[in-house]
Length: 303
Image (cartoon, rainbow, N blue to C red):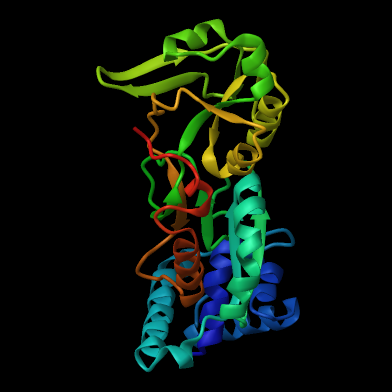
């Protein structure tokens, strides 16, 4: 049984598209289709339902898939056992990430990443929509939302600290709040669905519903409106650290930290089948960001 045929079959089970699965492995659609035919012939069963628009697994294909994954995992383990040099990560890695975070913090590190892993290629999709990792055929999803119950495996890459910010012009005109309750008298800029701001206090969590002239679904738009003097906003430090350094924004209510169980996460479908290219990507960025990433270096610790 040909290992490359198995690898193609597993990618096809994720992408449901022969052309896409073949392209990821450097195969033309015709060659990919021929490889799948040979796999079916070697097994003596039909693994795929093929139409002009989509490919789906047959009942036999569904039953065969975990065994194919097991074989590929064993091959990767065997290669790793004889030394890292003989199993250098290679191939195309498909990653989805939030648009702002990806542009600001993933892309600038790519020269160093490719210098370390010259045999890897990256298909990076930046979107603020939460895409389905498996349905989209992605190897890794970078997320900065609070994690819910999930069948995916998650590894924390970096903290995602949230703070309140305002522009000096806004504070000069409207004054600076001295307590969270004082925010009720201020113009607050909200991210859609996050109008309740929760503070950690000595008496426990304090939740306030805030109001203001702008609500948006885009973090960069919220930050830029805050820089423009429209009001007070919650922002991740990775998004505003440069504006704080330039004096375009000022931290507000620093003595009242936000209560948020958030972080930058790398999510993938299975630890047991963690491919070298996936491990390389996650390990690289976990080391690049570190326990206290560069965007938090110049900020005071939370009280």
